[in-house]
Image (cartoon, rainbow, N blue to C red; front, side):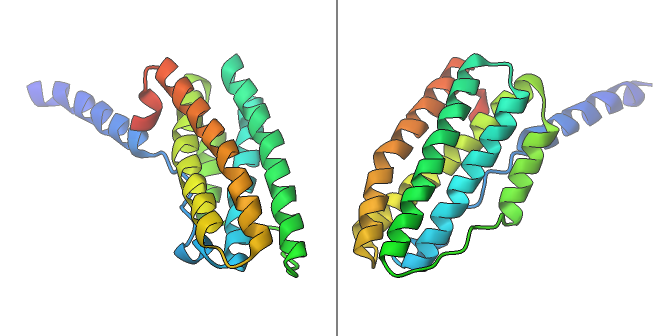
Length: 183
């Protein structure tokens, strides 16, 4: 009898652990994106694409006014950084194609689509933090060690924008009790 009572509790705890670990942040860019123009342009484009698409989902799903303001800012800022990166790539003699979502981005966006309510808010912020940490590393690294001057300048200009986004996400996560990072 005791075993039958503890089984539902054990299943509930296991399901909670699976849900808590289900967060899939977008994958970090490849190492060559930190120094090579073509890889940088593709990685920066994918990063911006994820930020824009995840934030569009946030505008559809969240009821949190702060997250709505943040998502709106993400869309506007990342559309601009995409345009700036593409213009710098063309200036460097490149003809970049638009980025396509990879399996990691698709999984991250799928998790956001499936989440709702406060779970959505925590998941969204939980994805934003590592995504912006990776973007910050990408732009700082390419800005320092990149092989195309026009793109290096654009990367350096993106750094304060990404820092602003990261700080805002950290503040919101703190206001929510820090639960976004543990998902």
